[in-house]
Length: 567
Picture 1 (cartoon, rainbow, N blue to C red):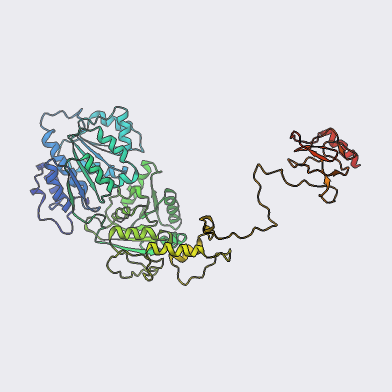
Picture 2 (picture 1 turned 90 degrees about the vertical axis):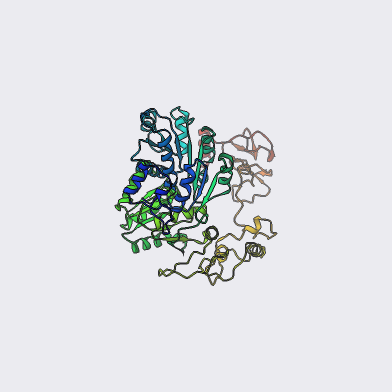
C-alpha cells in the first residue's frame, strides 16, 4: 500500500508523535509503517485540530492516508463510544472523488485503516445498479465515498442525507474541475452544514480551485510539500518524435522490448483505446482497454487482471489516470499527449510510486508540438529526446523554448515571429497547385507548409487572386438554378433561332420558330403547339409565353401516337 510507505527522505517525526489513537497506531505498526510522508506529517496535526486544509503534493506521496487517518481518529473519539448505536447512523464524513476506480480505492483504504475501529464506510459510484448501494445506505454508514453524479442521484431520491456532515474531503479536485464536476460539487457543498470541516487535496492548483477554496473553506491552511505540478524525481522521462501514423508500430516494438513488465498506455479517446488494445492483442501482447464507455464490471476485471499480471498492458484514457494505484508499474507510455498539461503529471505518476523508480516515454507527433512545450513549461523541465535506437540525448537545464519535430533546438523563433513568417508565406502568389515543398529537415514549420492548404490566404482576404476556372467544367447549379439553362434542340440543327416545345424538366423555351418536330406529350401541328404547355411557359406560334409550370409527362396514348408517327 503506497499511501503510507516511507518517502525516500522520511520525516524526523513518527506516527506515534502525531497524536493518533491506539487502534490506528496498532494497525500501522502491524503493517510496519513508522515514519509518515511529508504531506502526512504536516496535514495530520492540522486536521486533528479541526482546521480546513489545502494539501498540494505530487501523486503517489500518500495523500489518501493524510486525510483518512485523522478523520478516523476524530470519528472514534467523538461518536464511536461504548454503547453507541451501530445502526441507523448518519453520515459524518463525505469523500468526493472524480473516478469510480479512485472511489473504490479510497473506500478500501478506509476499511483497512479502520479495521480496529467500529466505523462503517460505504461507496456509491455510477456504472452499477443502485439497489445494493441503497440497501447499504439505509443500514447506516459513518464515512461515504462517492462520485458526484451518483451522489446527487441518490440525494434526489431521498436516500442520502447530508445535513449531519462534519467533514468533506475533495480528493483530486483539479481533475474534478477538468471533468466538469465543479457545478455538482458546489451544489453538494451547499447541502452540507456551513460549520463543516473542508479538506482539499490535489496535485495541481488551478485558479478555479483557488476560488473554490476561498468561497467554501474557512481560513484554510495550505500545505505544499513539493513544487506544484512537479513530477516524481525517480521517473526517467523521455520523448520520441513519431508521426501519428507510426505510433502503433512504435508502441508494439517498445512493448516487445519491455515484455514481461507492467505497462500502462495512455491515449486521448475511447475509440483509440479500443483500437490500440486490439492491435496489441493481434501481436500476442495481452492488453485490455479501460475507459468511460466500459461498464464498471469490465473496468474492475481489467484492473484485477492487470494487478495480478494476467494482462501486462493496460490501455487507458485520462479517466483512469488518477484511479490506478498498482505497485510495480515499470513503464508508462503517453501514446497521445493529454489535452491538459497538468494531466501529464498524473499520467506518469502511475509509475515511480512510493519512492520506486520508473520509466515514462512520450510519443509526440508534429501536431502535438505545442502541447509538448506546454508540458515542459508546466513541469519546468526539458524532457530528454529518445532516439530510435533507444539512446537518450542529454538535456540542458530547463528554459522556456520551442523545439523542432526532429528534436534539435536550433533556429528558435518566438510565437510572434512564427505568425509573421506565416503571414508573409501566405501573401506570396500561388504559382502551383501541387503543394510540394522541398525541405531539408522535418520541422514543424515545414510540416505545416507541406500539409496545410495554400488557399487559406484567399479565404482570409489577403488579396491573392484565385486560379481561373476550367471552362470545360461548369459550375454546379443550386437547386433553385436547375432547369433555367439553355433549352435543348432536337433535329441536329443549331439551337439559335429555333424553338423547342418538348418538355425538358424545368427548361424554358427561349422563343424562335418551331420547325415541326414532334412535341413530347402534345401533337405539334404546323409549327404551332396546340393544347400543350411547355415547362416554364406555353409555346404558341413559336413564341415563348409565360404560363403555369406543369410537369409535361406524356401519357400512354401520347406515347402510342409517337410510336405510330415513327413507324
